[in-house]
Each structure stands twice: as structure tokens, then as C-alpha cells.
Amino acid sequence: MDGSAVAAARRALLEHFRWQDGHADMWRVFRDPAALAAVVGGLAAPFRDRGVTAVLGVESRGFLLGAAVAVELGAGFVAVRKPGALFPGPKLTAATGPDYRGNRHELLLRRDSLGPDDIAVLVDDWAETGSQALAVRDLARALGANLVGLSLMVDQLSDATRQLLPPVSALVQAAELPLTQ
Ligand SMILES: O=P(O)(O)OC[C@H]1O[C@H](OP(=O)(O)OP(=O)(O)O)[C@H](O)[C@@H]1O
Image 1: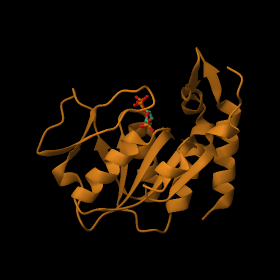
Image 2 (image 1 turned 120 degrees about the vertical axis):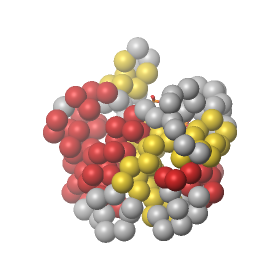
Image 3 (image 1 turned 180 degrees about the vertical axis):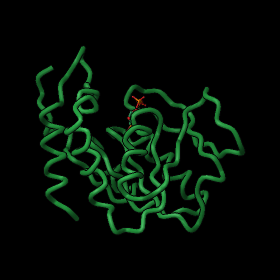
Image 4 (image 1 turned 90 degrees about the horizontal axis):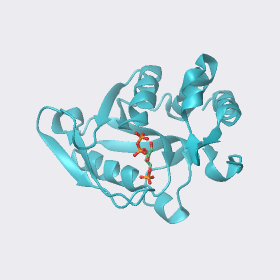
């Protein structure tokens, strides 16, 4: 793994991270071209040369990051959608547990988007309860794909939840972020 790429991504994230209106503001890093490139490179680094064929991303920030990481890895991008948007074709659905807001919802995956030949990675900006990541794990498994890991900007998962998931790589742990709001 290219440790320097991960280190540069960590620096970019920590430099641009702010709290805004009581919430983590992840958007600043997207606005800075160098920071965005560093973060995308750092998310891709642990999975280079792993034969990844598909990067999965959950709507909406997972779409942005996942597609960029897919380009870095020479893989395709697979959208995991939330209900309510047009998403043609036969689909699998998985119910999530309560997420960090206490909401439960369904995630949708097209049946033709993954198969047993796929080596897949889930990319997201943040995981807290892991509710969405666990549902994606189930969806990928149901289609026979090999979900080899998660690549996150921020890991706030409990140890118990992390053990239920494929190996998690993260640029930072949530506890490393500045506490000031
Ligand atoms: O670990 P969990 O508790 O499941 O939460 C993690 C999810 O929540 C956030 O997305 P959100 O649903 O807020 O959508 P967004 O990307 O549009 O902000 C984040 O991008 C993850 O997908």
C-alpha cells in the first residue's frame, strides 16, 4: 500500500474538516482541488493491485467519492440507491438498521450490477452505526460478489460492528477530529 498517499489524504482531510451548524461539514474537502485529489488517492491506495472490479457507493456522498475511487482503481462504479429515485431494472433491496439519525430505510442494488466474478470495495465518507455498510454487505453477498473491504474518510464504527464487516480502512478515526463545533 502507498502509505504516503494515505498520509497526504489524512492531512488534507484534517486541514479542511470543520463543524458547521452542529454537523460535520465534509463538503469543504470536495471544493479544494488538491485536497479532493489527495482524499481520493488515499481512499484508493489500500485497494490498489487487489484486482478490484467494482466500487460501491451509497447515495449521495458515496456516489461522488466512489466514482472517483473507481477511476483511480480502473474499476467500475456500482450505485447503491435510496428509495424515491428512478432506478430502472430488477433490483435487490435490504432494510437498514437505524442509522446515525435513528432512521431506517431501504437500500437498492440492481441485480445486474454485481456477480460472483466481482471483487468489490465500498467507499463512503463516514460510517457511524454501520447500518448502511451492513446492508451493502448483505446486498453484495446476495449477488455472490466478494466485498473485500470498506474505504472510509472517517471511521466512527464500534469495534463490535467493525467485526461484522469486511476489513475497514479509514483516513481518520472520528476521535481524531477536532472537537470544537
Ligand atoms: O453508519 P451509518 O449510521 O449508517 O451512517 C453512514 C452513512 O450516513 C451518511 O450518509 P447519509 O445517509 O447522511 O447521506 P448523504 O451522503 O447524502 O449525506 C454517510 O455518507 C454514510 O453513507
